[in-house]
Image (tube, rainbow, N blue to C red; front, side):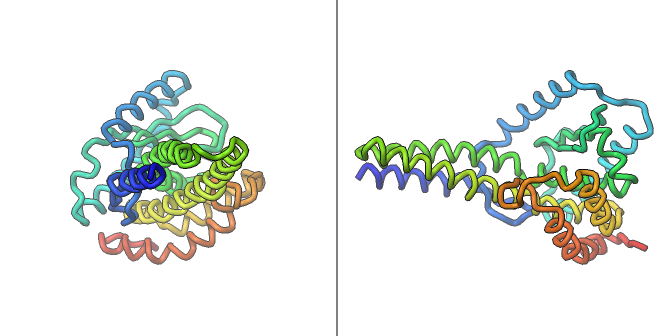
Length: 271
């Protein structure tokens, strides 16, 4: 009886804590609300900026900001056209360039964006910046941060349910169950979940850059340069939170016609 009650409560939490995202069209976990996530995101962003060297007043800093604004506008165009005019009402967009040699960029929930100077040579031009910007903004728009936080919380709930369900088992049996649960959620759950997020961000990002006026063909060229710049230093795809370079490039090539068709709806043309 206790096990059934725990399982029932567990399933009820799952059903009640799902939300449909307009960009992906998927029903996803939303155990942690935006009312909690966004203020924390803004605070952490400000803290990061205070602890790192922000590049201002340079041509590169302006380029990052200009491309960022175009990607933001593209998101608004798509959302308005599809009946989601209020979706970005709580976003507070910022685009900052940080003096750091790492090949990195990210976007926190709520539109807080950072580019590292180290990735700009790989970006090469505005289209390259738009590829990265579109991808990182897509993570925020698709609520991937919320999903990951919810998944982490779900692991804690699942562990509690598992503990209650195996209360009468021997310590050895409980240890085996716990170990299996940990392995299953890490390799079988969280990592593939993260790869799925990356692929989803590639798809959404490709559409955003296209609507913003950047030819999505350039995304393939960027990821090819990125692969060469990283020297292939990545773990096996099965144990990685990102798709392999070959998988990502193949997926992008297949998605480019769709991105161009979406951009064409808004009068965007490519040479």
